[in-house]
Length: 388
View (spheres, rainbow, N blue to C red):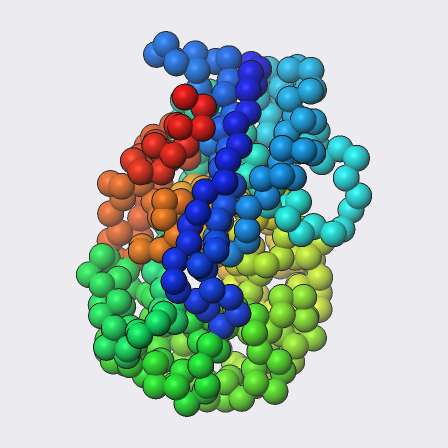
């Protein structure tokens, strides 16, 4: 097996929405196609990858550093002991001569390539990615479906409480039982009104609503919001302060009894280790949201899982950020607690295959070989154009 060419591009995933910290009017992402010399039905197998929303493209890093190392390596250096493509060996090649720390957008670039390599490896094996992952990294007995929640509730120009309620009803109509909304982009009184408006749609059941601050609060504000929302018994209170302010997170966990979630802006096993050591996270109730597509890919994510297990954390406490098909396969294979979903945002990359059906907030990864991005018709057109 040989990778004969690599094709990289940048596409928009922009919209007028905003959270407490950023707007998405300029949001974009990197896409990649790795073309192999393995022919099936007269066509070469191609591995596809992209990065999740919330971080901008890492196209230049891929083109200038990561891919040259991959493409310049002898083909046999990409193969495992079984003679098949090994994403783990490829990962080591891509990270050659890189200093530790300073993850930044480098973790995004490697994550994009790692996704494409895993897509390609599963296609060569002729199986859906979740089965390939389970056989190679898991216990060989993957979950057949995955819990998913619908993420939305963004701030947008002219958006009223009635609009917010209609959005959430739409998620329920699509089969989701749990939804998420943004807070911190208005004052506390307004956000409480927004939360209570959504709770009316959820029959007053706060355990079906998660709220997300996107890292904006200082400690005083975090504690003030915590006191105000604790009465609702929410699904979780997410990314309350700066993702690297472990002391803030630990202090909030001492005062806020209900579940906390964080980790989407942590990009390495070292980051995850520090969060567990110093962030006050509680393995009986809290959630870790590290996104494989942003954090050096599945190879590094598996190392994070190993660290969490050694610290007494169940994989079921992990619910990756991103709302895409790659993490859905990982969640099924490694028996995570679920996966985010974006039913209406960040197209064409967000969401699952076009034929995916959510029932009682659960969805299957599907049976297409690899990640199955060919089952997202509009996105596949964009990916296919990279190398046609």
